[in-house]
Length: 506
Image (cartoon, rainbow, N blue to C red; front, top):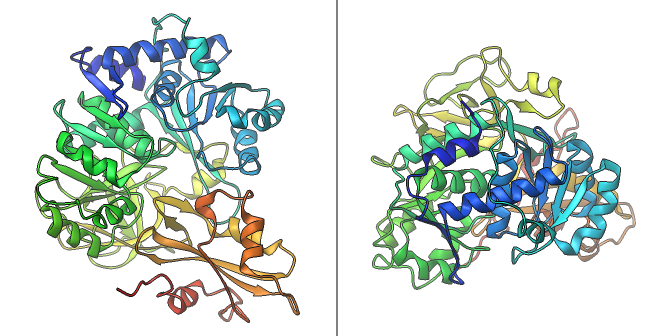
């Protein structure tokens, strides 16, 4: 039997006439329409030379056709490679060179630059804009609906998502059809999704939360989604009376709480609010419960694993905890140095194992081997503990990853750019608590002797070199960076020193 994610999704459809996607502009798409559009796009992909196992790189604005392109890629047996729309051409050069896609879909405004990069990879380039128009849809307009889903094994690749490390090259997490389907079905049951649900989809679709969690759970439950191009608090509040669920990052909930229109009455039809991609402040959790009567359900996932744990649907949703291991997933806490299993409430490395865990890093066998224990557990790099009730608590990261607004930011990449600026002696990039973004990217800079470089100069140089979400919110200057006896910069000291930088006085 065909184990393709698309094939399994299509077999699960009970009513092809049921609406799966609606937009604020009034457009609707039924499950049958979705299958037909995917078939047309899959025919276009194969006509452009895409074969099973080939990579299809996509950097386009969020739209309904952009979402269907994901399904069409999988239906054609290819490997979907979503790329953050904020990435610059300088950043894209590595991803395209490493993944060697057969086809790249991009915004028409970026076509010229992408074509220069694609020439080295011998990739075809197609366009798709925010309105869902471009060469892809022009070709799809005359393509047939019918497309026989390519035969895939459960272990075959369905997607590659790049997740950078604090040092070295970015890593492509290889996710199989089984990885994605198993997690979607588990979450559907665990979060009680049914065909009666209506999800407000305001997340981007270039990373795991919006693409795989929100989308796949909706599709496999036969539910529908209101598809928004981006987060807008006013718009989301207006949609709550006709929806049942919202998935978001902590920033969503912080901004919704700032709106006077958020009330118990407004949210009375909603049954589930899910938060992830970054730590949710316990204060936000408590304030949301007080204002709406709903407890936000926080969960824990990674690009490499999709979702690992979740607070329960029924039962205590503990502020500051990311819940219990999902059915079929095993989580444990170990000594980071020895791998020895640690007892309850002792802090160590979080390791996970299950059908959701990725196959490894694209073209990095040594790195893959280093990140897995001999018994198959994946070493997440997150530090945490498990309490006496089995709830997992994330207490920090072994690497100095910064999570801002749900996006991962890796300090070394930014530090390298800053250190190359004339007048900069060295820099350290840290994350500092921020009420709105979870963590604010903050650069601490030491000037070269007699240099006068200022914050505006540094930010102007970085603008265009780095995606907007990576740009420091503040650039601070110090005489020296704190170091330990081995000469390593003590970022924990800097985080403590500037802990209140973004605290606002009521």
